Length: 484
Image 1 (cartoon, one colour):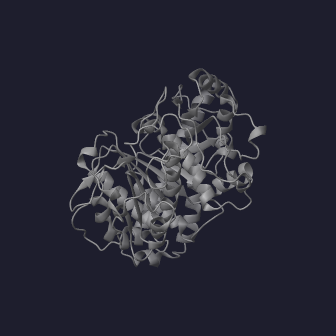
Image 2 (tube, one colour):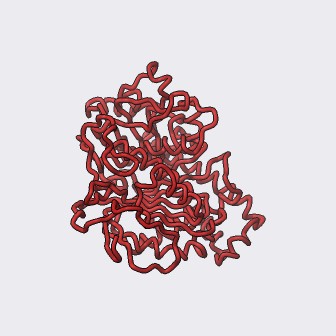
Image 3 (spheres, helix red, strand yellow):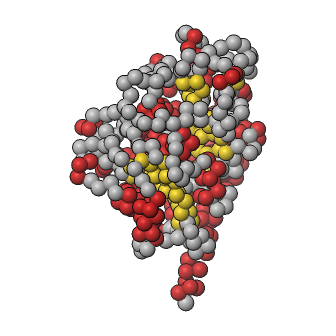
């Protein structure tokens, strides 16, 4: 690539404000032409921190299979017969010699996860200038990711972002880079790309599993910083996904790879309409339009079905009605909370594969009459339907290793429900336990953060909890009045 040349939604500028560990292209396969930029709907994936980077690798692994591409981004002659390979341009830039390069930027202040990408099975796939790392990690500290180490990298990251239709941001709320740098990046995106769609896939702290003691601090601070800057945030927590892998796939000790491959199925379903044909396709703008009744209430709950191992698939039913009902069960949702204790404000059902609208509508009608399904009175329709013809694919894995069964159809459910307030309440309680003793606060103040930001962030989360409670209370009052 020549100095100053640009490609896809990114531009490589001749100079950077900070030293970065960048690799040059090993051959001429990464040359780009400005004339290749023919796609009007370009989506950029931004992967922040260890969780975002590792989840991103699983997502792109699945995208390659779905589009019939090999690990180097070229068409794979041994790929399965996938029929329609879909639209490459939305997620990939095609070079003059037929290589497809992901429109993805990977950033971690810790060099290890990025180095694993550079040397792993997909080292020829990603453009080397879009793999950015620091020389020291954020030490699970929001303030290091947001104020000190992160600020050294933010300009270099923004330099690479250009002409796009929207952003998909992958990060965790609990890590130092994911929370701090993720929040800093979204502040800049909100300032410089005010009208572009910004969707988050965020790994939320699990109720009983923690990778760092200060996760509650990081998560509350990150939520406070990003709540005004994200259009829609899809939450997953590791404990819920662990349970799905153990129960449905028979994996006694799931690894992060198992978790990320399952989450990648949801990410792929949400984006399949941008890449493949369907009778009811959904673009990024429609998610916020149909799922977000109020700007701050933008944290849909994710469910996915079917999740079944290859060993058990012959004993399962995969009818549209069956997989739809599974999405409304706690055992298939990716955040630990009880939807029976809340009210649904909106639901998006995204079907893939051998599905017809008649079967989907029949399944929705059957859901609506169930006693366990409670919809707020002021949203009588409640459902957004998406149908994509592309059959779901799975990353090859041995059945005994918990490989997902190949199925003809699947559904991802995104539901905005007041029940998720349970997760916020749990997080706030853990925050209060530590902050009441000012435990660990000095590590954040030492990185240039004002101590008052803790109080400000906690108060903002209290308001968010109250927002959900108000909606649930109003819905209950309307129901009581109707019964009277």
